Amino acid sequence: MEEAKKQNTSVIAFDALDYNTICSCIRGAEIARRPVIIMLYPGMREIISFRSFAAIVKDLAQKASVPVALHLDHCTNYELLMQAIEDGFTSVMADGSTLSYEDNVRFTRSVVQAAREKGVDVEGELGHVGQVAAGDVYTDERGFTLPEEAASFAEETGVTSLAVAIGSCHGMYKAEPKLALDRLQEIRRATGVPLVLHGGSGIPEDQLEKAFRMGINKFNVATEYVILYEQLQHTFYTEQYGKVSPFEKYKVVRSGLEEYIARKLQLCTIKV
Ligand code: 13P
Image 1: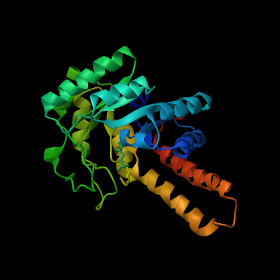
Image 2: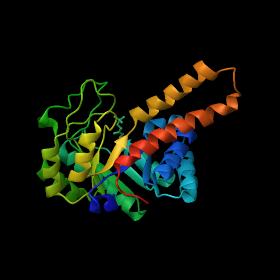
Image 3: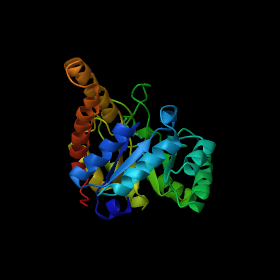
Image 4: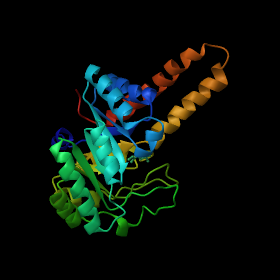
């Protein structure tokens, strides 16, 4: 992220949930010759444990020809964050964005203090990036991150990156989002900490290119990737089921995922 900041671009982070989605992120990054961040939603630990996820990413990262980072996405629970660090995560998101400013600072700072001893990075969030499915409003600038608060939050907590609310939302948008790029520039001027854009699925590329140039240094994508995974499996079952060996499925599915990752990563201008 620091390198992305220097080069006025963004690294791209994808939420994965199993071996296929992890592998395809790395292979896609190798094809694109770009760095990649692989994230896990804490809720997914019902499918894959923190320890297993971290071990797989680290094992494949060591063999990869591009930089690969590991990150725990949106975690609101202190004990769970400590568990993830214990289980091998080298970067975590302490999400106190639904708390008051003061409580968010307290929560995030406590995670930073514990994580720092272990050399683990901590992403915070200020201003809440909601969910389209929950009907959260993301177009009202009264909910956007305030530049002066972003500066004091970064200072008071010691976060290594900060997620900001500038008009994006998690899930598939019902209407095209419009990022508040002026607000982003004000936040960038107010604080030097790398900024993170959540709710990446469905944001038009021209807006992303501008946002990356204006201060976003980490960009999160989940829904698009997971839906594609579903679609590729669905296509395999409807078109190939019974015609080819079931052991072929992972090849077809992974190659579709890799292609998507390699294409998406073109938005990042760091070539490795
Ligand atoms: P989307 O699911 O909208 O791509 O958002 C991903 C995200 O921000 C994960 O933290």
